[in-house]
Each structure stands twice: as C-alpha cells, then as structure tokens.
Image 1 (cartoon, helix red, strand yellow):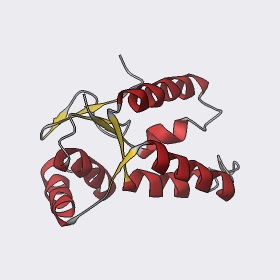
Image 2: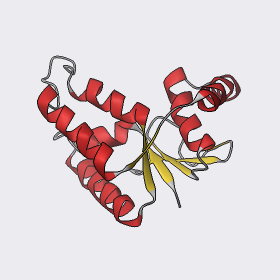
Image 3: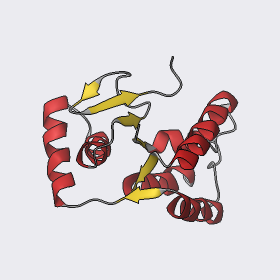
Length: 142
C-alpha cells in the first residue's frame, strides 16, 4: 500500500529521547524505501528542517542546521517527493472544513488524498480513522 509520512514521524528518527520510536521509524522508512511505497510530501521536508533546528522547551535542537539540511537532501534523493499544486490546496481547504483539521494537517492529508495514497502515517490524526479515501495510521499503535 502506498503511504505518505508526516513530519512528526520523520522527526522521531533523530529524537534520542524516544529510542523505541526511533527503531520503529527506522524500520518503517527502510521498508517503505525498499518497496517504493513510502512518499514524502514537500511540506514534511520543510517542516522537518524547521522543527529539527529549533529549541524544544529549553532543550537543544535535535539537529544543527548543517545536519538538518543534509538530512533534507537525503530525503529528497532517496524518496519520491510530492509537491503541491492548486488542486491540492483546494482539497486541503475542503478537508480543513469537513474534518475540522488544522491547516497544516489538512494540507498533509490533501497530499495523500490527491495522490491516491491509501495511508497517512502520523500521530496527529485519529488512528484508524478514514479521511476521505485515506486511512490515518499511527505507526506506534497496534
């Protein structure tokens, strides 16, 4: 099944405070890359760099800007990246209204909906809920 991965999932790959989630994400990304079934929205790469390089409640950032930029380049090289267009933005607007999603979550969902992805891997959506034709899956839950 084709799936997109949300920013929060990618960030766990670099979060030493969550070793179990790091392990899950590492396996998920490797498996999806090998099978060619995991896609990354442009939005997730942009958000990844921003989130990985900012301070987290008094703690140091997960990554230095140099390392975050390098990791973003790796994501762009290794994965199929989905880019926005007018239809995607319009779908996100409808999704925000219909599902009461934040703008960023609606935009992430729209990437999956518009590109025919069956799953959206994220902690930010209700696990196992269907949004349009997309099933939200929290990969850390059974």
